Length: 522
Ligand SMILES: *[C@@H]1O[C@H](CO)[C@@H](O)[C@H](O)[C@H]1NC(C)=O
Ligand SMILES: *[C@@H]1O[C@H](CO)[C@@H](O)[C@H](O)[C@H]1NC(C)=O
Ligand SMILES: *[C@@H]1O[C@H](CO)[C@@H](O)[C@H](O)[C@H]1NC(C)=O
Ligand SMILES: *[C@@H]1O[C@H](CO)[C@@H](O)[C@H](O)[C@H]1NC(C)=O
Ligand SMILES: *[C@@H]1O[C@H](CO)[C@@H](O)[C@H](O)[C@H]1NC(C)=O
Ligand SMILES: *[C@@H]1O[C@H](CO)[C@@H](O)[C@H](O)[C@H]1NC(C)=O
Ligand SMILES: *[C@@H]1O[C@H](CO)[C@@H](O)[C@H](O)[C@H]1NC(C)=O
Ligand SMILES: *[C@@H]1O[C@H](CO)[C@@H](O)[C@H](O)[C@H]1NC(C)=O
Ligand SMILES: *[C@@H]1O[C@H](CO)[C@@H](O)[C@H](O)[C@H]1NC(C)=O
Image 1 (tube, rainbow, N blue to C red):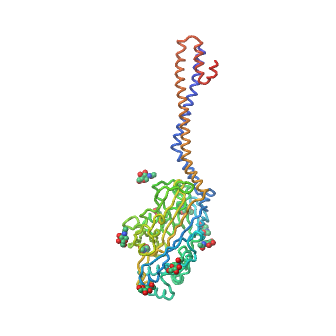
Image 2 (cartoon, rainbow, N blue to C red; image 1 turned 60 degrees about the horizontal axis):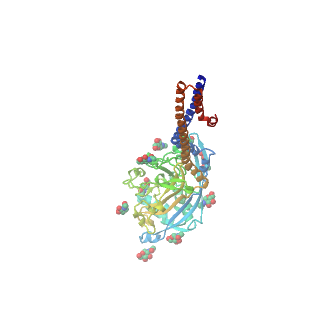
Image 3 (cartoon, helix red, strand yellow; image 1 turned 30 degrees about the vertical axis):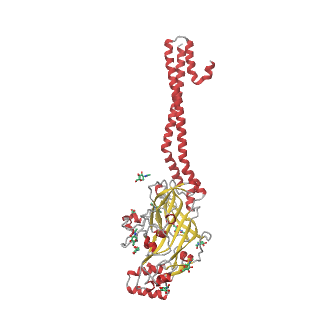
């Protein structure tokens, strides 16, 4: 009798211990499920960050160093069709927007050098090839545009001594320099010999010398840039991933009056710090822009291969004047007068030429600048805004249309007879769109994987853990409750029930929990 009871107790307690173990496992599952829900995104973030870091030999590095993309630059030129009437009869200038003239670009980062402090330096090579098939004309099209070197020189002489202006007038007379030049599109972009620059090169003291005797809006841009750019690889601090640390050893501009405006901590437009949200302000820096340009969130977009992205554009106040945007005061170190709203003065980066940048068709500027000329249609945000579509998780630019117009701010100078009739005007020269339409399949495939799989995986894994945990828990609790009931009757049994047959029956009932079939046959 006693032996049988002991056996029964033993059986039931081992048996219960097993179910307690199952309870522990199921709670573990549920707990792990909660951990997955909370931390899965951070783990994915860590993995993505690790993969993004620019490391010699990594896939990201290869793509960054030699982008497998085909950026294009589309150039639109404002051909002046009534130059003589404008100068002689004071008519409103009439321009004809020509283009696009399309150049296909090939980029490569050359001379790559990694530094110990988590940075890498390079020289960017950009090779341009004219694409006749996409263009609306040929590079040999003849256009009439303002003579930028001449009008820069005359506008600058406005506050110089009068005899200097008269001297300038006679030199221009001898050299037959006119306020408008007739050049081909190719010459305007890639350079033509300019008599004034040639002269300046010979007579101006060495220190102030212009480095070139040719003039072109994209002169010397076809090839490897001599500027050594150092960017953060993200190895030490992923929040600086892809940001410029210095250019030619200088980490700040010096033109402006505040650190914020002088900052060059910005992306070069290809990669950005990952994991951005809709509040993030991105910055891009370009030497010819003469500053970094802020970009703010606009809307959600879907890129090629259904990769989700955010569209970023400069805020509407980006080129606003001081009255509208007091923060922009630092960009006008010598003002007032400062550039009007909608324009950005880059003369400090352009050898003091009075060049103002704006958006195409004077988008965001007072309409009076556009209507000062005939032939420019009203700005259309679709065609004339500047935007970039960026994959927010990985910080990769998927699509971009960087659109900028180049204008010359001409000042009337009465003493120089060639330009005496040229009024104060902001004269548009051309605008361009540097664009990227899509990334290659190999890149978007990986981006899609990295952005769409983790949320699904998180849900599936967490759901599985919860379901398995819950099922196990329910079974175990049920068994335990039933087991506890049986056990209490078993413990009660010996006192009241004397026959071994009944005790055997109890044992058997206990055993049925795991030996149903055996028991059935008992
Ligand atoms: C530009 O305008 C001039 C007249 O001012 C004209 O001779 C020339 O053909 C125009 N160029 C093109 C490409 O239309
Ligand atoms: C200027 O206007 C006069 C008359 O209004 C006209 O005869 C002359 O041809 C115009 N000059 C030019 C260069 O168009
Ligand atoms: C490569 O980099 C080194 C130092 O970083 C520099 O001296 C050299 O001029 C660069 N070469 C080219 C082709 O830019
Ligand atoms: C990292 O090292 C490079 C080369 O030595 C140097 O130009 C750069 O200023 C350094 N950057 C930082 C953040 O220390
Ligand atoms: C740019 O340079 C390459 C050779 O380096 C040349 O083939 C190409 O025609 C040039 N592009 C232009 C627009 O001059
Ligand atoms: C650049 O600006 C930062 C603050 O924005 C300042 O701490 C740093 O000293 C500046 N560097 C130089 C070289 O002017
Ligand atoms: C963005 O900014 C708004 C207002 O400043 C704030 O309510 C929101 O939580 C921010 N969102 C993120 C993702 O930081
Ligand atoms: C542009 O900046 C230069 C240098 O700061 C200044 O001399 C010039 O007046 C400015 N031009 C305009 C239109 O504000
Ligand atoms: C545009 O400029 C004109 C004249 O300069 C001025 O009267 C008008 O108020 C300006 N419009 C806006 C929207 O600022």
